[in-house]
Image (cartoon, rainbow over all chains, first blue to last red; front, side, top):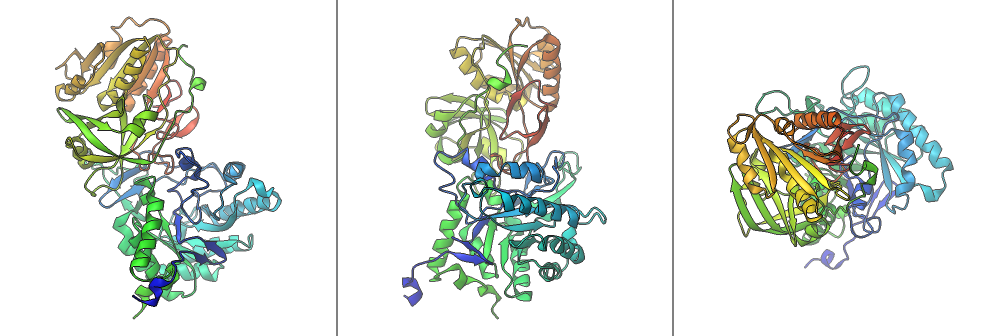
Length: 323
Length: 263
C-alpha cells in the first residue's frame, strides 16, 4: 500500500480561476437543468450532479434550428443536427431568475455566425450582469465560445479556420473579465493550429472536441436521413479521436486549461481525458442514456482514481503524455 | 368546439429516474410484441398518453427507445413494441423474466376529465397509447369508439392486442376490416356532437384527422411521433411545428391539442 492510498481523495480541480468540486461538467446542449429539475422528486438544485453547468448554446438572435429529423443513433454513438435552436440572448436572460439558485458555477455557451454576433451576445449579458440583483442570476463565471457554427462569409465552420476562430475570441475578450473558453471543432487537419490561434487571441482555456461532421442515410431511400443532410457525430465512437486531439493540444500548449470531451460514458473515460491533459471533462451523449448518468460517472471517477492510488485528478493529469 | 380546452390540461407528473423492471408477460402479434413490465414507480405516476424511455438490453445501442404507455394496471405497465430496427427488434424479443431499464412516465397526457363521448383514431404503432386512454375513459363511464388503420393484414394483427368494445379496423390493402384508411371508417361513423377525438399515428394520418375534425366541428388531441435522443427535454432533437412555435414532442408533448399541431 502506497502512501497515496492513505491520503483522502480530493476530486476538486481549478479550471483557471474557477474552483470545481470535481472535474465533470455537462457538454453544452445535452443537459437542461430545468428539464431535469421538473422530473426529479427531490430538489435538483440541492442535488445538482455536475461541478459546473454549461447551458445550451445561446445566440444573440433567436434561432428555430434545423428541420427534422434531427437525431438518430449510429454504431457506438449518435448524430445530431439541432441547429442551435435557442430563444436568443434577451429571452435567455429573462429566464435567468428561474435557475438563479444554482450553486455551481455557470459557463455560458455562446454561438454565432460572425465575430460581431458572439460579441453582441456577450455584451448584452455582461450589461445585464453589471446591474442585475445578485439573487436573480446564477453564478455565471465564464463563457464557452462555440465556434462550430458556419461562417456567414465562407460557409465553413468558423472553427475550421484559425483566423476566424481568433477573430471570435478577440471580439469577445475585451468585453468580459470572466473566464473564456474556446470550444474547438475536430473537423480540421491540425487541431493545435486552431487551439494556438484561440489562445493567442485571448482565450483562457480550450474545450475540445465538438462533434464530427458526419452523414447517415435512410436505409430505405438511400437519401440523407437528417433534415439538415449532415450532422455532428458524438458518443463512444469518437472517444479515441477526441483523446488523441486533447493530448496533442495539451502537448502543444502546456499550461492552458482544457475541458476534454467526446464519448465520455464512464468514470474511466473521464480519467482517460484527464490522463491526456484535460483539467475538466464534459459529459455529453451519456446524458441521453440515463437520468442518473452524471452521478454514476462522478462516483466511477472517484473509484478509478482510488483504485490507482491517485489522490486527486491533478495527480492523473497528463499521465498519458509522458514519454 | 368541444371537449376540454388545451388550457385545462394540467401538468402531469413526470419522473425521469431509471427503474429496473422485470418482464412479467409477453404476447406476440406478428412484428409487434405487447410487453407487461412490473414497474410500480412508473405506474403510480402514469397517465394515458405519456411514454417511457426503455434501454435496449445488451449494450449495443446508445439511445433509449421512446414507447407509449399501452396499459397501466396496478403495479404494471404495458408497452407495445413494433420490430422496425435492431433496437426495437431486441425489445420485441424480450422474454418473461428478463429485466429492462425504464425511465418515466414522461411527457404530457391525454386530458379525459368531463369527456362523455370519445373517438380514438390510431394508425399502426400509434394505436398503442389509445388503449390506455380507452381504459381510463371507460372506467369513467364515457362512451368510447375506436378506429384503427393498418397497412396490411400483417400489421393489423396487432389489433388483437387491444381490448376496446367498439373497435373498427381498416387496412390499406383491404385484407382486414374496411379497405382504405381510418378516414374511410370515420366517414361511416355517426359521431355525436361534442365528441372528443384522440389521435395518434403517422404524420399524414394526423393531418387528415385534423382536417376531418375541423370539418366536423370537433375538438381533441393528437399524440405525435418523433425521433428522440434524450426523451427528457434536453437535446431539442424531437421538435415539431405547432401554433405555439417549435415544441418538443418529449417535453411539451407528445400530446398536443389537435388544432395546434402543424403536421
